[in-house]
Length: 186
Image 1 (spheres, rainbow, N blue to C red):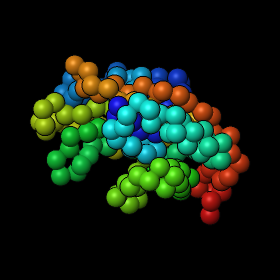
Image 2: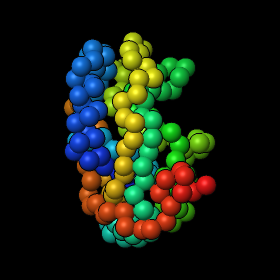
Image 3: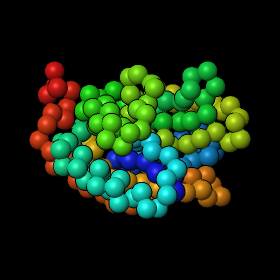
Image 4: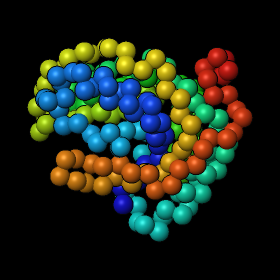
């Protein structure tokens, strides 16, 4: 199974992003991800056997219990990578709480953390069709002033005829009391 740990969107946040996309023409040029798959990745794990889920779930539960909800800011429409865009994201400003969670999960699971610094939180909306370059309509448009992440999930990523579908296996709420917002971390 292909696995990762992430934070799902609340229904109102999914509806807000969907409303922006439904008014745009650019989705016709991209392979859109299923809206139920939208999430913010905390840590990509990779291929693991099914029996690896129990220890991974224990790690998700422990980290959700020690981290407070995280509020991301300035979610803008962004295409990546810049040189040859193949993905469209709602990209948020880097957040110390999510970066700390990312590194804590990587350490606990002995998985390499992201090599990209800073760690850019994002929601992947679409991928290019067959590696084609597409019009980058509305690049930089503010879609979400804030996004509150309230839970942590172990996800599986399955192939489908329309690309990958991401579904949570189990979800735990953030119930920790540590700093959750940039002002509190300073």
